[in-house]
Length: 96
Image 1 (spheres, one colour):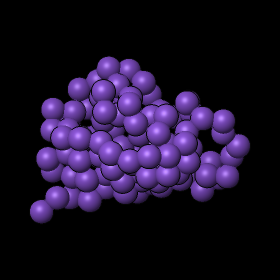
Image 2 (image 1 turned 60 degrees about the vertical axis):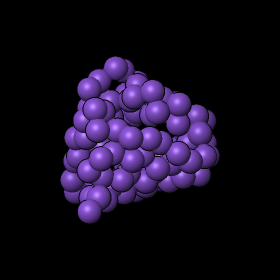
Image 3 (image 1 turned 120 degrees about the vertical axis):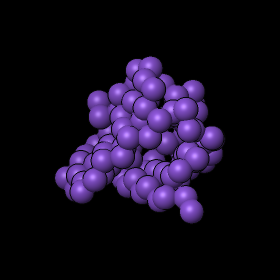
């Protein structure tokens, strides 16, 4: 697991993007789905799509609401050698 992902019990998930930060309450979390390359998190107000590699390793932590912070890496971090899950992009879309 990368040091950027915080694994602690929290009532919110902070999603840190380069130009914006979202704080979504776990009380509005509906479900998570995906595999090693893509994970989708559905909240009642937003959909979050995480892409990368070995993401299946964090799917259980996400679905159990054990993560408090999910940052999108800056450009230099995307090319770093990481042995655990590696996030390459995070997108957040408001649900209409």
